[in-house]
Image (cartoon, rainbow, N blue to C red; front, side, top):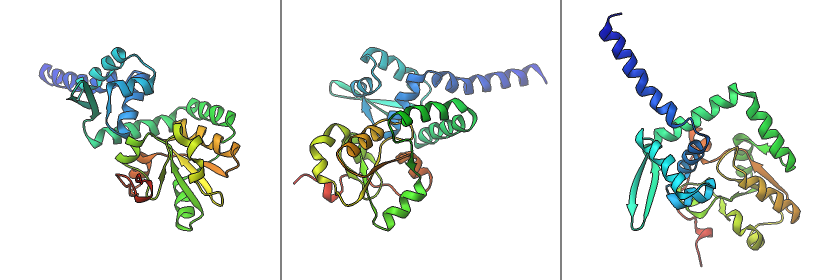
Length: 230
């Protein structure tokens, strides 16, 4: 290999490594996961990730530096979004690779959800079958902006923070299937725990909208008629 060819190889792999360095932080991965749901302001991301606004901004600048996210100034706030749908595909592929190669992920997940009494969760296939047969009510417990950006067809939107006061909107005669951002989102686990304590039959759906879409299944954006304010 000539010196020129070696330099070419070095330069190319250095560029690839920039992506690896940008996503080497657990907090940056969490921020990227949140942005795969919908666009958000720096302040919103900071609150969700339990970081300071300044620290959140620094993490986002690193992700922006490798063009994984992009930003737009809107009044006094800066809104971030993923730069391309391929970013979401990359994140999901990385997550699934980690799940197949790192046994610790399964153990950590089992320990957490097992302690909440709802480790058992529905798969996409099982959920589809129950929805087709009219056996379940699907509940989206993410924040409203995420639901509007994209949700499972027919899902009712009741954010976790509103669940206690809006339980009367849910049918008592059907099983409730709650979902949120994916297999490691804790919102649905908390929702199922609260629903069961209130006497509902409830279970957690193990996947999120990204997983659903990657299986070639449809998503719905906007507010469905029954969720529209009256």
